[in-house]
Image 1 (cartoon, one colour):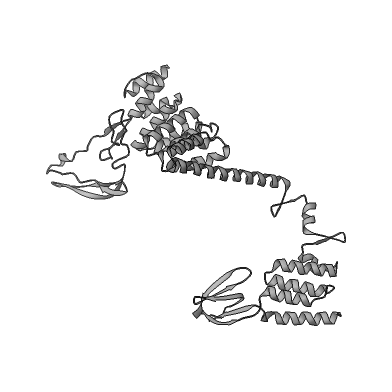
Image 2 (tube, one colour):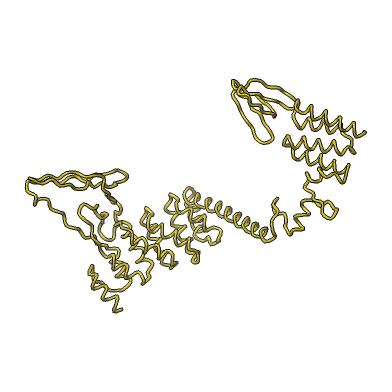
Length: 423
């Protein structure tokens, strides 16, 4: 076929391409081209890049035509193998329609017909270097890159990505195994439950540490106890000790908190120790009590001056009470009642010839704001008395000091400081 004939065919194909595929025109004037399907008063048009759905009343008209892939096949059947320009034009049509695999095939046909067809070569990613066409892959290889799972990266990056992939695979495998074991602990027969607990306690794969820590939020106390035992295998991991610290401080079950303190005593982790010291500084009775207990369980003598400092502290008048305590040897009912207060307004106090104002104190009790009741005042100004400060005694700190030192000076801070300096 002569070149003018090729050009004529190309012009015909380009002019006729707009008549192929389905065309949806909306009442807003927007036009979309793709494959149309209608169902349930909706019109869906699928393009190479996305799928759109419109209500039928939004559509002005639909013009149906063959799909782009059918147009490609029809046009390809009409082209001769030696028609490089025709194959290149067909590749352009396919690329414009999002048929990139078919476009690459057409460009390859164009290169087979004309090995020096620059446009087709460049579409295929070739570069001309020293008069030689080099493929994109070869260019990247000459730059020292390797193909890793569809990405061209340096060998070092490929090794790193492969290591990360293997680690993720191990973590996912460990997570699946842990979830199976926790299910058996909760739902299995007694024998299966005991076997699952033993397997969970024996887990020591580094890849299992993350999933183990995640399961410390499990609702079953038996699961949490078994996981705390498993954390003993991760002595060098800060995350294991910090997870045990969180359980020792905030778990709702006393047995789990006790087991977590046992784990902390065995791990002797610096970050967990520092976290307990930081918790001791928080101005909250409940938090200080438990932080003191954790420090006593860890058994690090560096905690002694801090425990002496927080043997007791004072609360101003109107401050919330310390958490309720029960007789030693039974569980302590910690964390109940109003714990945090704040000023929410002012109110007048009136006495003969005097008007003064006092802040209105509010507190949070299980998420509900509780307002402090106003005092009952008599006629005389001297009846407006300020309630004395109250002392909060930290028995957990006292127990910890007794365990660490073997001494007992009760709540006499000066005596404890004297002993500490002498020893």
